[in-house]
Length: 429
Length: 88
Image 1 (cartoon, rainbow over the protein chains, first blue to last red):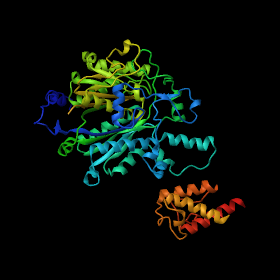
Image 2 (image 1 turned 90 degrees about the horizontal axis):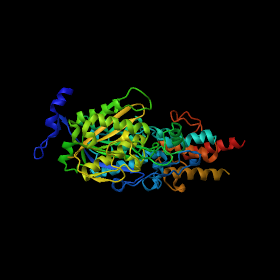
Image 3 (image 1 turned 90 degrees about the vertical axis):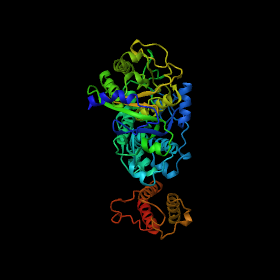
Image 4 (image 1 turned 60 degrees about the vertical axis):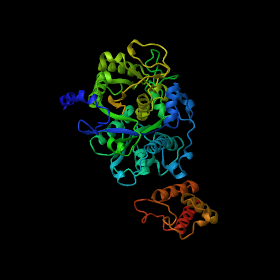
């Protein structure tokens, strides 16, 4: 299988320009992105988020929620002005945890952009696969507080349907009438890359025509941040990926949701195509529950290239996992250097977590926006907060200022705690 | 006292059903009011919180519960009984 793929690689990468525009790659269906939506600390939609990427704006601020004074980590990329009543009625707010609210908002934006209606037969061939690590963590937190701290003996009847990790995916399926395959992936920081990769594979193999995919996270509450504090990997002042003086990750919150669609379907209805999803690979370190492995990451990177039929030198930009921890950033740079050889010094790699924070299970989804911006707008989002060169991260990390550059193919990396790696490849259409 | 309880119950159910309290008739069933199964457990929770009582209701066996939800009249009577028992 691999030999067969490799043998076809050349022909595939020199895909002829239109009018000859094949509907398949290697005999499999092509998958394109026709809609995008987000809410995160940088903005409540895609346009404002991309504007922040271009400006290199930081969304990390002082956290504001109950008992924050008892935390030793008090910064995060929090959505401060979130007013659910502007989007949902009273009953919906009672039933939707914040991670579901964020997801539904992003999904509505994505579906509106794609211009799809799932009422008829399309709904039977459409589904939703989303990533989240903590699910309804605010709901757990509020209700544990009620029964443990406040001594209450009764909780609201919607606690379980609010907190379950699949609540967001289920509500998206109900909102739009998606009656095909739907589920939730929980692989910590790689959740949404795994989700989007699976959505890609389902359409490519003909298992679905349209998939809503991405992920969300809403972990910025007392219990959520307190748990992370325990691990001693959080920064108290800033997220500075790849910088020699980096001192840890900073959490964010929000959602990113995309419409992945069969190319033939998108083309036949004249949809605006944002990018093509061309490859995906997963690997497992099988080593350590928190320490990353360069070999595991490299296998996912090389696997995504091979799956896409791309040569290493065709990749112009990588959206890094780039958490800003000592361990991740040097391991990721070693993996990229090894996977790309000499081309590692020519490609650009940036971590947008420096701006929107680490959205944990939703992070890959928001980061895919930077990949689409690179392909569509020719703007590479920067790694902000970069102050000192680190010889162990000696790549072009696009420090502090966005850059104009034309790139034709990009990767998005995600490497989760537990050693689970997921890398996606996108290409300009 | 009982009239106050009755009007407060109607206010709570009306809010759940998105109606005015005077639109909630004594013989109206939860179904008549457009209250579905989640709406029903939400209403029961709200009544428990309001009156500080525990309502013996199991959604698996609504007919066997010692809390008759047939219509507004039976719900009001059952809540009034539970409030009276608590006071006693």
